[in-house]
View 1 (cartoon, each protein chain N blue to C red):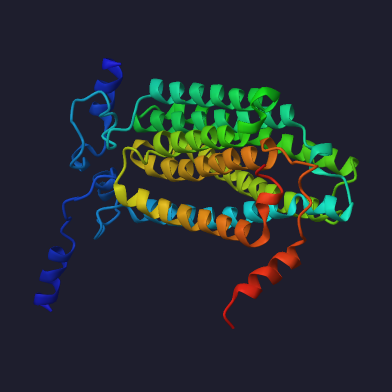
View 2 (tube, rainbow over the protein chains, first blue to last red; view 1 turned 135 degrees about the vertical axis):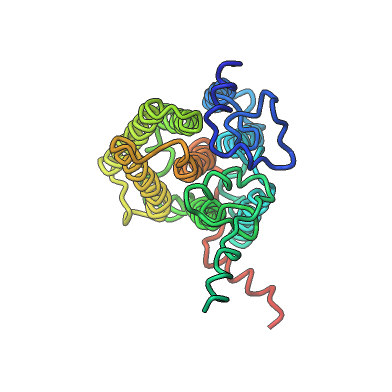
Length: 128
Length: 247
């Protein structure tokens, strides 16, 4: 790890472009890119996402939790969504303005979903 | 004239990067890109704005599917979702796309460290996984056709194929984009200072992944209740909404 960080710093083309939140020399200061995590973190996140997906599929077949299936699936799905956006898309480490732009679109999208469901009764169909 | 020429160097003086998040500004200044008023790279900002708009696009498609997927049974026109959807098979597709997100971010990390060969390997792996996903989707669509479900069969088929086909089109564009980057890299045109090019392609690719995370849950995993669905058709719902309007 130390070798990787040292190698990254020696090759980084933009070490002077660190934002105010960057901690030079810290473990997360890789490649001078606002503290993007290292490969091990990415692999760990991917492994967690794979496990969560396996859990989602497994509980789909468990009749004992049938009544709670939909909320559990939604929570797990939201967790996967946040992990990919936060770590793989780097929103957790990038400028906040990127987050606001994306969240704005996301909120409008969710509003459309809720509005359409309210108007046309999607609850009668799927969210048992 | 002398005055005009004297002002040009003043205008082109590079300004210090203010914001983080761009994270690439200085490097790209060196590559010939001018600094921006926001301190953020405009290409990255544009990609995030596009992804926000694409959220609305897919949000509308998913909402439409959720509303219409049960209408077919009201009308008695199968095949129905429970008859054709294969959860284990789609789970494998979801896993493949998740892993492609990992290889994509590893490609970016490799290039940011100056490891061009590693970037090529991970870009090729990502394109391969994306192609496997597309092959799986083609197989799934073929199976559905054999089951008698098509775009014209019923509203479930229409909304399902519209939603998943648009997602597949996004994946196809992503694979082409990745292969283009790989081609440029093999010709020596993708260097460490070009890591933002890979990062922007990566943002698009990860977005395709998160859309599938939502589709996988809402379209495939949330069960369709065949007993309790006796609800009014869409037109009746619209009339109820219209009755609430004050005019």
